[in-house]
Length: 125
Image (cartoon, rainbow, N blue to C red):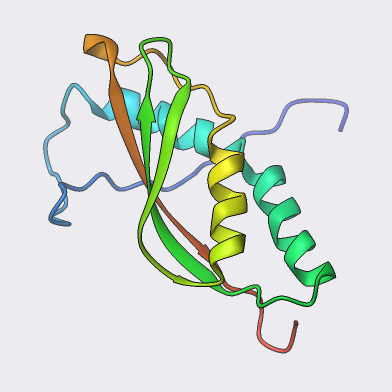
């Protein structure tokens, strides 16, 4: 609380078909930064889950979010496909992700793809 902490996050970069990369690419640095930016959405995503719980809705949902980025890195659109589970929970998550600002993408536009899984611990509701 009074100092600094170091957190190590194991990240593996893959191609779109899921094959692990063995040689770094120019895009890896941007990808790592995008991962950190996505983590900043965690409080908003927890708020979505809390709201669903409070309303007595199912808190299990999974979705692949494709985030379109403007030249300045702001999310212009969040599309969810494929998805399963509570659609309103995923819609709330999309609204939380739409508030993010990523680093400005090369070429003036960009896309970030993230898979989110709302899966409460067994025995909780």
